Length: 474
Ligand SMILES: Cc1cc2nc3c(=O)[nH]c(=O)nc-3n(C[C@H](O)[C@H](O)[C@H](O)COP(=O)(O)OP(=O)(O)OC[C@H]3O[C@@H](n4cnc5c(N)ncnc54)[C@H](O)[C@@H]3O)c2cc1C
Image (cartoon, rainbow, N blue to C red; front, side, top):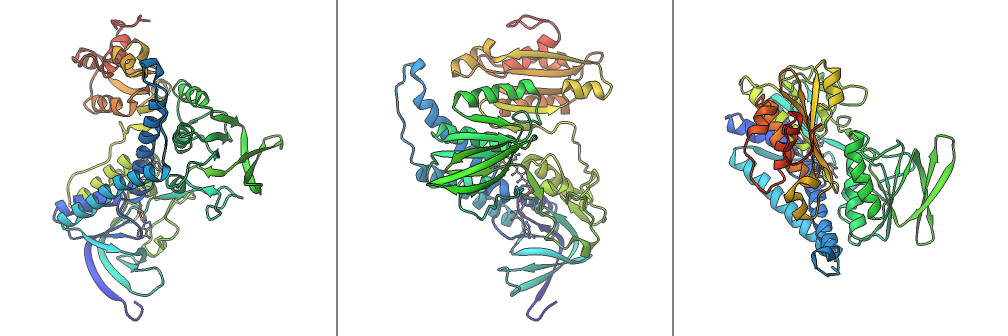
């Protein structure tokens, strides 16, 4: 302890109040554990303040603006005017409502909230610095710790997020004006979601990607409609090129890229958004003081009870590895709290859904056909196109399909992939079906409401069983 430190004690110290940490803290509070949650920035973490929620708010707003201006087919003629400051203000209001709710829920569940930056001081103690200048620090003695410090965007050499025209996703979601032009480095899910937002708001968008396709983590037939639609919005793609630097040019900047043969290209823009992935935040925690090890990439490896290599230190969320998704963070947080409380909880990653909120959306859960094959199943697939769905046609969004993957001999559902309208919502039924050990027959014989997009799920299962009604069977 340094002079002026005070010392407190807690059963459970949670470091970081994102969807991993605040959920862990609330669950620990529900289980009557004495819990302290330390946050250095804002309750709700990346997800509520700078990630999932702000991006989805901006996607909704830009979709609305775009759709209102492109509904002539339905007899609607409009030319919406976008006031970016007001749009961002609305988004900030949504964020404030949610983060305020998190704070209230924590308090209502008896969670002690502590503002400051925490680092480990020993096996059972952490130092929390309030205000960041070494003054007003506090030592917290704990029985258990849960590390949930999340991730930060990776910087590409030559692109410093401190430089005004260089944006990370957080800065891009808080712009006061719609940029006239934008280069996006990276065609992963964050780059592609924001490419859609800005293209729909009228920005001239160029996407530069080192690999040879958009959304390389997803199967080709899922990513293809997203690329096609982005192109129809005017997005200009350049694959096989790595961004190498930028310089001021007139009123804007020039972004340089290099392909594998060393050929250099240049793209003019007002700003550049770098979205090439995220690194875990573990390097500022003095983990070695608690004996906690990380992988070379900085992740904390955990077992199926969210435990690190140190029995009483847990890690949840982005710091615990892929997939870096909010709902995976929250589930790990719940399990960590329950294990600490002595409950028989364990993690099960069989059916972790993932969604990309592009236009059209992509959502997946469980195994692809290729993965099922690799794992020794005898996969069978069924597919249903949205252009055969009455409801999809009535929404004006009928691109894409639902695909289910099952084990042919047993009929057990193994996975599903959806590209199309409301994919992020539709995937929930299939995740639940996998969790419940449902078969194709179970999904196919469940009566689905008509007319809804969810009928496509039933029809995909029927198609796998060779008796879909509204599409030709294989
Ligand atoms: C633009 C964008 C869009 C996204 N969209 C989605 C989406 O649609 N769906 C989805 O599932 N995921 C999405 N994500 C990912 C999601 O935000 C993360 O997976 C999720 O936030 C991880 O939660 P976490 O609790 O592990 O960490 P975080 O949410 O990052 O929270 C970590 C918290 O720890 C705090 N902290 C760090 N170090 C310390 C310290 N030493 N002391 C005290 N506090 C500390 C940080 O300030 C932060 O508040 C998106 C991310 C981005 C950037």
